[in-house]
Length: 156
Ligand SMILES: [Fe+2]
Ligand SMILES: [Fe+2]
Image (cartoon, rainbow, N blue to C red; front, side, top):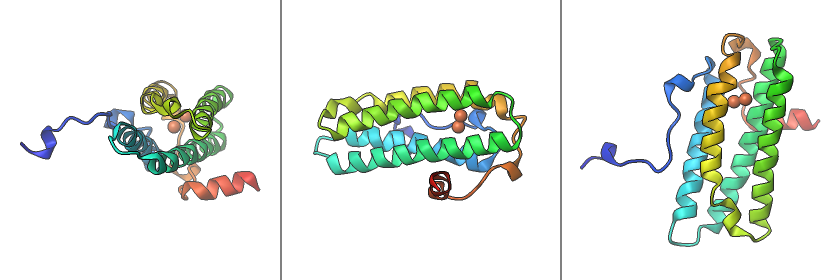
């Protein structure tokens, strides 16, 4: 039995989710990888506390950085539904942050549904919201730098 027959516990990014820009697609793919890592560490038999904590930090970094990247690009192309899109990002960002903080403060079960939430929200958001900017986006409008650069710029 080859590795290709093994069913993954969490779904993958699929080509129909492409928003037409490689950097934004890479961010979206990374979310699926982070959700998988989180799922695997949460369902491991041994205590994976350190890995879970660092994965939550990576997830928050991606949520913050990807949303900044996307909003910066949408502003640059004059996307007319940016305010609504921005609001949906902020709501999800607050949910992830609240779950992460509850986990860090000792309620470990708070993170149990997080991989599923990330996958469900992201799949729905990409296919229904991000897809609407596909015809607006231009490669020259997307800042391709690593996420940390965007966060530093936003903080400064
Ligand atoms: Fe996105
Ligand atoms: Fe978005």
